[in-house]
Length: 118
Ligand SMILES: [Zn+2]
Image (cartoon, rainbow, N blue to C red; front, side, top):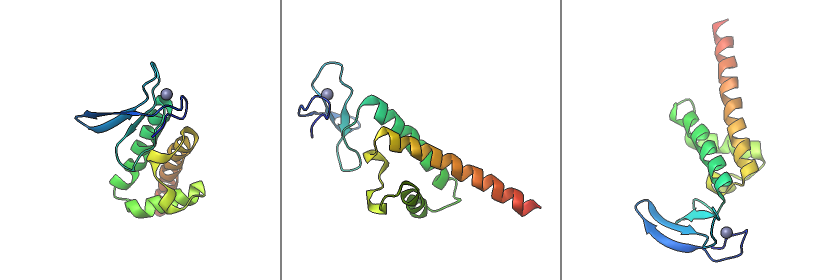
């Protein structure tokens, strides 16, 4: 794995959370965790991905929709294939879109509830 900013090989280190690969350049925030669920990203991107994950997980954890179905909806929303829809692979802009997608979901939920009542 390579830091896309410095074109340097990431250095792997064992941590209590698993293997962490980081750019050796001083002050560079590009980090990647082991496994295929994430790609190397700078701090801003990782924070955006984290927000996206929190917003996304909140929906399916509420039990209103199945996780797999929600992933399909998100894929459709982003114009991606389901198999390419991994928040850990997204760039910052796409991660922000996920947060908006989540907000939209809750807004539609609220509107649907209003309709049920009347
Ligand atoms: Zn770097």
